[in-house]
Length: 263
Image (cartoon, rainbow, N blue to C red):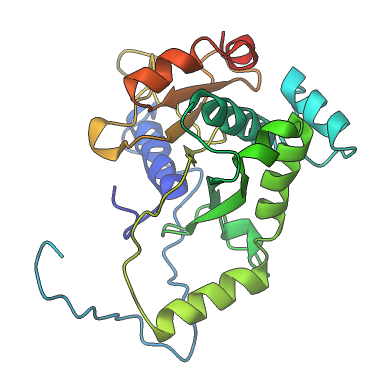
């Protein structure tokens, strides 16, 4: 599903609802536990139709206390870092370390896709069926990222997420509407997408039972993209789909800090 239509939250809400319909005991009395909200959020003084000057048609805060979470909070002297933020920081450091061509003063960026629904004031309902996905970025130099500990990196990621307030979201929307444009993906060391909060493995459709795995698809991948799914085993675990060039993947698989978590 293209994010111009809806985001991952809406996508998995659709699949959860479709599965719920299929698994209904009485096909004549099907009720949906979480009806989608189709009200269109748009600034009152703006026309929802946006025209682009094309010249060419081609133009979780999970409470599961993982070791890396405990370590990140201890090293950063806080208790606010989530499991996903700690894991993101660990993967960021590991991939940066694996990239042997990185220079100490080279800027490294970590992107994290987030859901803006709960960040608005008042917040939008979780069932809001549109695209409210955004990307926040933490940035530093290779030298600083590797010289400091995991907690320091995790705090950078946490601050990037915490800074995504109602004011920031609305200002960003206002600025974009004043000058609509299509964004191109810039240079970035790591991009964490999807979410461990999505309900993936509860979709049975009344057929063959629990799904075995989730995959992102070859058309949605690029070097440095790490897709995060809820772990098949449950219990707050997370499954990662890591996309890197072969030579970097080989080095990453020899990184003890990374493999201690990935194994």
